Length: 289
Image 1: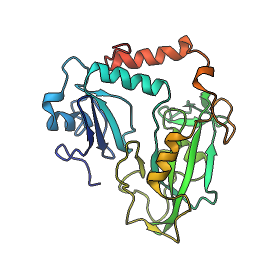
Image 2: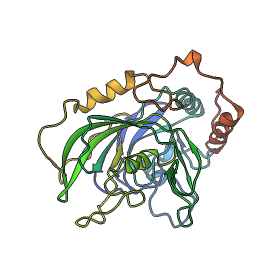
Image 3: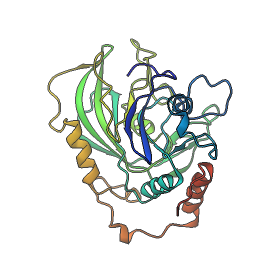
């Protein structure tokens, strides 16, 4: 992918109800700040002015979030009914999220389940970051689960890296970046949770990309594969397998355990429902529309 500009928005899918874009790295989804030079919101208004909805806060109903530094597939609902449908899919865990990443170091295992609970970091100077349970200043950690599959080993700027597929089974803030860092293999270019190498202290981007829909693989040269790919390295087949594999229950924190059938899940609590309703109010969605 080339760097983002207001004119070069990449469209992955379009229908009457949904638009899926391939978000550039280092681009915010939306902002009300006048000084914001580029946002996905502005790219959409430039490309599809007729689709902007004046009844919404930002002009468009974004079905989920991607970090500023993360690129990849992002779904936009084009009407209230579609937004409500998307909300229910996320709420009922019927959405598969998958990400590609380059991580520092060669990960020896083919598959890893990362189950560190994640909380907000209250340490002075780290107020907008997250941390794992047991670390200094970690407040209100919640069970978090990520599946990792190693695709290839190689080099980036002369340093060993692993190309991996990540599947977050929970939706904590900065979950993938925190989990990879806790594993000892931070995302290349992650200046918040990673450690810069001596050779390459500021990569041109953070190497984390959402392939949820699927978008093209962005991690081609200048990264250099070393040796044969891992046996399970066919990306399309892996993503399809993720879609059909039952998710483990993050509360159990046990690797490889399947979640109970949806009919056995406990009913949604008021504490869980509150954030969902807040999300709905922010994007002016109607869950029953």
